[in-house]
Image 1 (cartoon, rainbow, N blue to C red):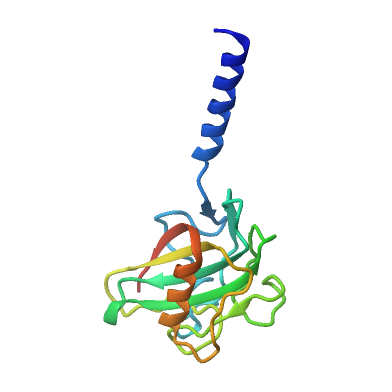
Image 2 (cartoon, rainbow, N blue to C red; image 1 turned 90 degrees about the vertical axis):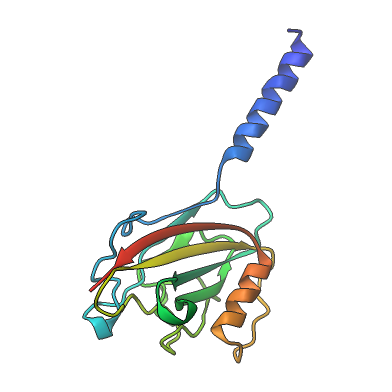
Length: 179
């Protein structure tokens, strides 16, 4: 193989290896497919209602901000939103423990903590009815805008619809909790 062909091959190999990296979400407090701890459970169900620390890696290069949601697809009525946060600074690589508590200083600067299914702003943890455990899907969205165009009067569904319209990549982490 001549030198220029070898260089082109190595460049293409390196480019494809870089493209293979995936946008990922992880947490030292939650393991994929694991069970949420009582620390993350809503206070009405005997928990501490603390949002977990989350970390994301390998976002797309053109990301301008992030959003984070927690959704229970097993809840009646088509599911339940436990957390909707957006306008998370592009420089963030995750969220601190307790970032879901509005005005706590645990979330980056201009993060908006939207109203969830309980009618609270910020994070409200699991509180399923007794019976079969529910799944809780933590999702980070890489967005194509620095500030999401969502009115304070929008519904949770409209806020999430807008997040999804501006998402250029997503990463998820799913855990369960039951009583």
